[in-house]
Picture (cartoon, rainbow over the protein chains, first blue to last red):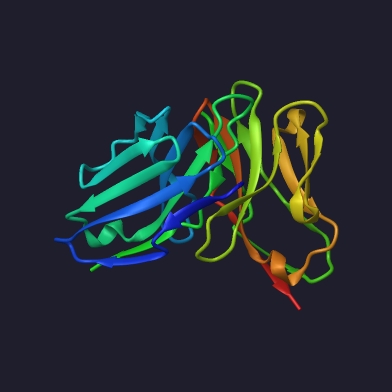
Length: 113
Length: 112
């Protein structure tokens, strides 16, 4: 299985809602990533988990809360988002040796009203 | 400073024509280099990668890229473009264990 899956595909939420994005991989990768991508821009790194521990937080606002329950799952909890947080949220995974090619999921299109 | 430059924001080619997308990088060490493709509203798909060894690397979908250290370039090529190749293409440098430095992307349009 060489796939990263993400659910849901689309999400619309109000600024007072709480929602979660889910990412799953079964490639045995021990690094998992969250990216945010705005239209016509490259992805921007948000968080990196290595061996289920948070390794990198790129100064992301606390209204985004990541969680890595196990080596295959990555969640992104959303609360009190702003309209400018509307974007495509991408999950990725990679090995931790022999190069760091990242495998991306299809993304969740988030719209904040 | 570490950076990746994709000089062409948009490129339009006719179906069946050859394609070259440019990528220049600035990185202190020997780079890990990647090309990704992204169709609208989709995730990024890895086309090919360069870590070391042969400077001409073959990828999926008939793409290849050549690493030229002297020019700090990693250009992507395809001899004959198909309409389904229309997409956004990102060049990236692996900057450490986890981080990528992405170029700004090149949007490819294919004319029938």
